[in-house]
Image (tube, rainbow, N blue to C red; front, side, top):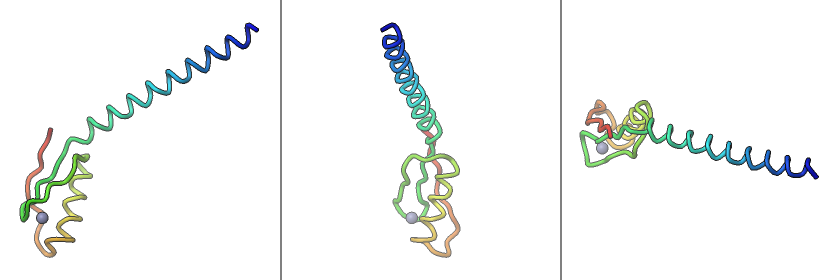
Length: 78
Ligand SMILES: [Zn+2]
């Protein structure tokens, strides 16, 4: 009987731990994704991405929409 209560407590503890880990992960991801690219050629704006993600997004956008044009525009940081 004591064992059952212990197991329940341990499960509860694991669950709380998992929620905390998830929360930390999500807030860290949000903090990293704070770069947004405004295209220099059109009104395209990327979503909020990491710094390297925003660069990759701009390169892909230029390849698709402004082929042959050097990647420009501005990076917005929130
Ligand atoms: Zn564009």
